[in-house]
View (cartoon, rainbow, N blue to C red):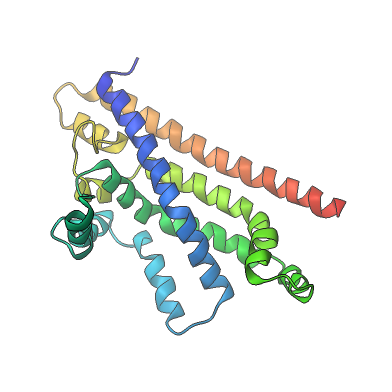
Length: 233
């Protein structure tokens, strides 16, 4: 049985990871489409900026978020003064930090699906009079669904293990921002906390593995569905 503190950390981690994916998906689809289907000045630099969280230390990402979205930051200060919204040191802030760290994973997954898509289908729809929005929702979006699902589940699993950016931007507040990795860290710093740390590590390992397996299962299942649909057509 999990203690109340362990249960809080587990459910908070699930909530933070789910919200981070919700933050990510609309922007990830847009960015992946821009990088795949358009050409513009500074595209290479923009591509590098999107993938920057993959190479930056998570603590640096958390610090930059603190500068931007803290109550004294240009964006966070405006949100707080105008709407009373505080992101730093809150669970919403933890979700934002997790979303930023996992964003490149979603973009890469969707981008791979877009690059593998037969552009002839889009061209054929264009010749039949379909507009850009109609083509995107009727052709592109259904066909890249495997990439979206795989990216979302992978980002969810990765979000469950995010530590550096969360502790820097949202701190380690029990019941508010103390997710599974932070609870594990706290247990390791506590005398006689080895048993709790072992349970939390096992939970984290199980959730991460389950997330990766689900991502692969969903991707394969949707590919088969699309294949059957195309064969039937």
